[in-house]
Image 1 (cartoon, rainbow, N blue to C red):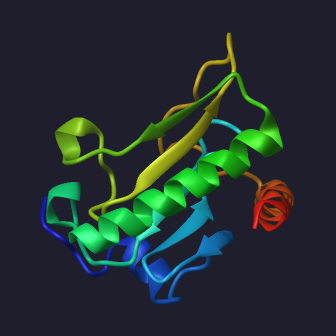
Image 2: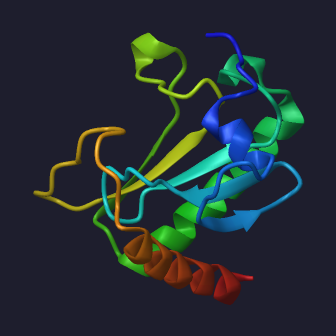
Length: 142
């Protein structure tokens, strides 16, 4: 998969597309997934322009991993799921739909099926309300 600088995540990073931002560091940004597979589905997007994990410079990978762990803790504390799935796809055959490396944080509850990937848009007001709760938890954790 080749990197395309016009991909939606690159546009979000440049401020050309809106997002519901949860946190930002020098290396990554965390946003609410607008087509969530479950309540609280978060994406962590490294700022480095890389299509797949294999292309991501190590400092950017480490920064994104730190952000992913921080957000996964906040999502878990906010929503109290039975488990938390953390995923990262490389290539279309693996399920990657955007040619910019990113990490999925998806809360899971026993007996609740995931919604289909990248299918249905969530209500922006509901996403923002949940984002406020996650941000508050991030603030509590410091």
